[in-house]
Length: 170
Image (cartoon, rainbow, N blue to C red; front, side, top):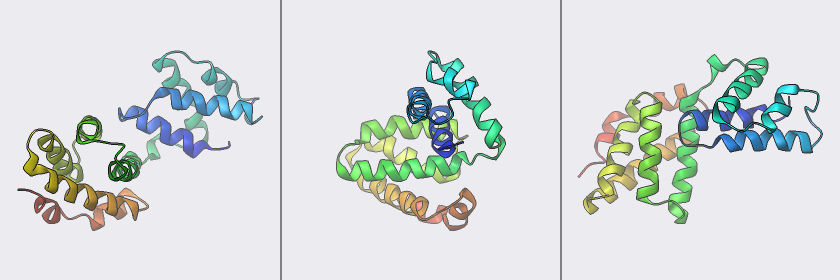
């Protein structure tokens, strides 16, 4: 299966509430346009899917066939997504307001991980309290730097320090 890791990423971001099911459909359409996987009926059906439940069912069926869904590292996908958000924030294409919604979705859908607590909180506070902007940016940079150099959630967790995060406060 070609580009299965892309489908995995799109699926996890959608399940985490920060991605679109359309990315999964577009993945299937691209596979068919490139002449890849045209004998896979699930890919053909995914390319024509019209609702979220259908997309999820087909994507899970495709992914389970090639890689175990149970082995997905959703923390890693979320962390790499945060790296991209940090780059977008620095480039001015993401704002505190747009990030607040995304961090809240990630925080809730990941089951409230410790490493995301201060970032999510500071972002929420920074939307209303200007004094929280600097602590938010410090925490955002800290978390993004850790994830950018981590290849697994285990590696990230071994380097993450709650004490450092706690210093990013007013």
